[in-house]
Amino acid sequence: MIISHEHKFIFIKTAKTAGTSIEVFLSPHCGARDILTPIVPPVEGHRPRNYRGFINPFPAALRHPRKVIPILIEGLRRSDRFFNHMPATLIQKRVSARVWQEYYKFCVERNPWDKVLSHYHMAAARRESSLSLDEYLARRRFPWNSYRYTDRTGAKIIVDRVVRFENLLGDLAEVFADIGIPFEGHLGVRAKGDYRADPAPYRTVFNDAQRAIVAQAFEREIDLHGYVF
Image 1 (cartoon, rainbow, N blue to C red):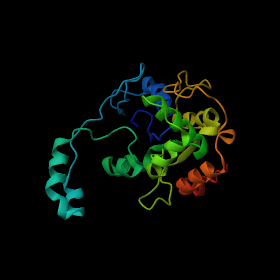
Image 2: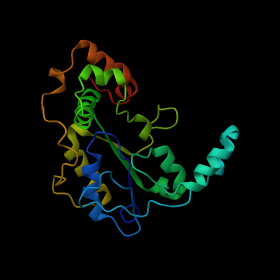
Image 3: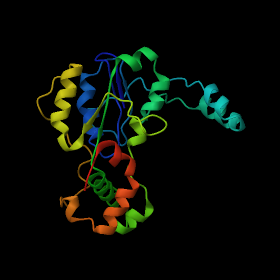
Image 4: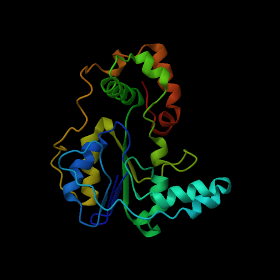
């Protein structure tokens, strides 16, 4: 996640959408006062900064009176005011109304079947034993993103631009032109892109039952963006 006061933009990082590559590309263009949350594991070229700070725990405690003590303790203990993959609704609460209103807010979204296949390959690569696609789908630990760029109901998009992963470089060229970031048509890095050894298109991988599982799980994102198999 990035909040750039120098270029007046907020980048909301979503899952499996080239977010890390975008963060690495943007890092050198950000100023000393800008906020960049850490990447785990760290990636060369990306410099986290200014993400720590006090979090006022009292508003959350008032909303959940039965959990006052744990919330106060966690709020006083936690020092990461901003963190990776932070949803827009929470960012809105932790920046000023002026920053939220004036800064250009954007994120990236991806066809859910393609996104799930990418996430499966990452999960399989990180697991010591083999993981079949059916086993992965049964776990239902999917890379949902819509809650990161919509309001609390999940029905309204609250960022200025949702870049399409399917047209990533073209859409980013427009975004970067709007916020004054030089761009030569490529990010120059493909972070976390080594998990997927098999480049087979998702349409050739999913059977009808697997396709239906993803369609049901990502119904909200499909409705928001009109994705089709």
